[in-house]
Length: 226
Image 1 (spheres, rainbow, N blue to C red):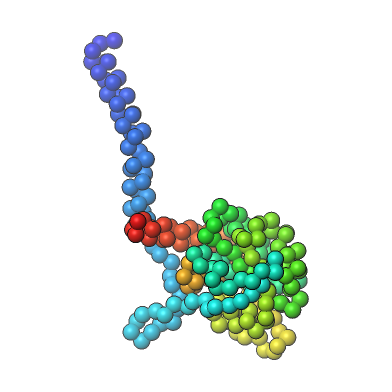
Image 2 (cartoon, rainbow, N blue to C red):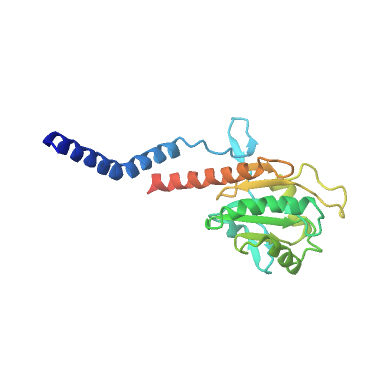
């Protein structure tokens, strides 16, 4: 092998070694730039006269989960929340909706800051023990997906006036509200997305993608503060 060939071989080895060392750095820079250009999700709220938006924020509440434990707004602190409204004896629509949510939830089992909440709109029947049995079909940890019951008026107030999951109030005290809308909250309990779960082939990707955007938003904030 000539001196020129040896020199060329050494240069190629040095180039390969350099790429191995530099590639993670380049990928990191590209990722950071992509994060910096991340398009945030809409913050839903009331439009004020000056053009600003007053966010829709979930208020204080007190409900019971499938283990009989009290759940309040404080338990949502630091959590990205996916919420919906259902009832355990619903024959078709609710199981289909919760099955769609289950597929999303499986993707975030390792993310402790992502929480799923399903509120019963038939709380007189859906006691904690009923919800415990119902929750078993989805095979997810109780601290990842909470099924909630409580006073009917409190749940309906949340559904209609705060989550905006239904467009109209029930006509009478015995009527059920029924919604196939899934709502996304950020860590400040602000509404950041509405997703139709029925007959929507984009539901899984849309909800998963929106959660990932929020995760990246908070990661970018941490990097900027850090």
